[in-house]
Length: 349
Image 1 (cartoon, rainbow, N blue to C red):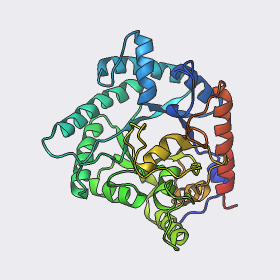
Image 2: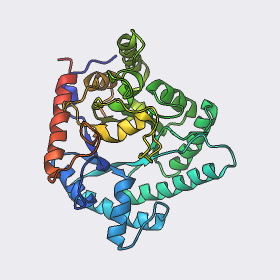
Image 3: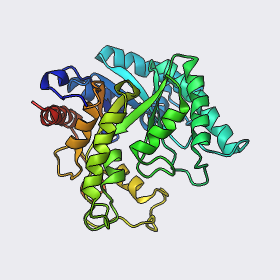
Image 4: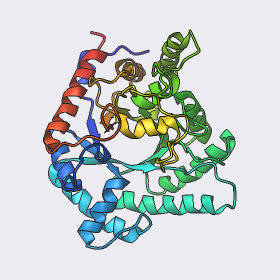
């Protein structure tokens, strides 16, 4: 494992997911880009939930998720805005529910149709990376061979454009909720343009924390902390740094009332508990959260990785019901300050 010297952390580039800032109707994508740039970030994760309304406004018509011609036209404007502000479009996200559908099914056909459309958007936006979250769909295959075959086919489509695939373990996923399960799939894909999107929340949220328990921790295992420490040490020894494409940073609130194991009657998201937790209970580090963000980040840095760190938060407050703020500049600057403190606390010396 590599040492984490303070000097080696100074050149780490910073990114901010556009879906992670803004609470009001006037907080549109151009305003978000301005705030992110003003705070000193180097890049954005371009989020489809931001691109869709921007496209509708920019083109003065309703633009749907499969209107790829319009989305490409709007993405060219996003690229122009980013270039004016000195921002790189690091990745297009989140591409979801892709892998594992039955061969010949309409779901699988739709997944690849969406992939081809998103590749067009990537080209228009000027990014070479697609983030793919490990599928949380029910009814998909659990076979690593099937999952990796689908991702390999997608990777080959991306490779035609010199694009990359960043696979992320969503901690509520059907088959790959942990870093180790994700890594097994990526190894089986066996393509040079496929790597990892890591996330402090997803890592700790899958192996150490549990939003459905009173403690907010995985209960019933007295060796939980020891096992998680060993898992992080194994990660640092195992993962080649060049296979880490970027690391997303966020903490989590412990819900004041444990989340129900099934969606509440008025919840039409259909998300599993950790999915609902992810969507509304993720603040910046050092802001009343309880996950071991420093320990997870340090484990990633000990691989030798010194690439992109990206702020991806979904802060709905301690009750998950939503926050309201006017000044996005303040929020973006807080995120940059949290990045600096995280680097200080990760350094060995």
